[in-house]
Image 1 (cartoon, rainbow, N blue to C red):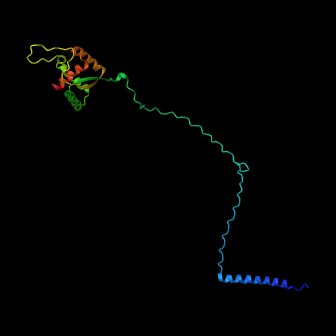
Image 2 (image 1 turned 120 degrees about the vertical axis):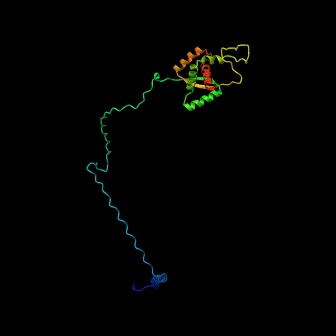
Image 3 (image 1 turned 90 degrees about the vertical axis):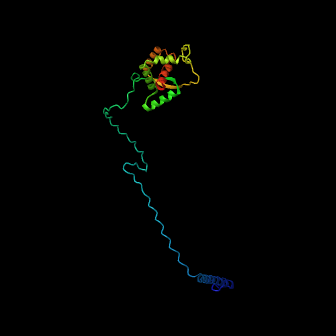
Length: 222
């Protein structure tokens, strides 16, 4: 009969129902032991996706989103140059060689004591070396002794009371223990021309140094 079940079918159905009830009772017991479950916090709403922006070409833009290269700027023409007013020149005109006297150096040898006094004179009066030399020569010319000073430099000294005249030499004789130092002087061409005339007049065979040194030593030491 269709309404009757065999013993095996009844056990199968009863076993299924019993298993289901057992699982329900186990879940209820676990829920009681664990206690009430806190509800999960609500999820924040997701941001809405941004609507795609449609690119509409402007009136001066070609369709399709393509842009043309900007046109190069055309430089404006430069304004015409305005004439500058006449200004006074600030440039210093170079001096011509004929307007100045370029000096030349002449080395003169004088005694150390005369050189020391000459340096003091230059410092006190603001003189140059050549100024001291010319002052000494002018003083000897005023006293008319410049020629005698040159001759005395080239004449040997004789002992006092000697019956023999002193020997005159063409050039001054180097004396033992006498050491002269250099006294550089700067003379112009016109001044050198005067010195050359005096060398001829006095017979100063030693040239510029002899002529000037006898005058300086006589002027500062005597």
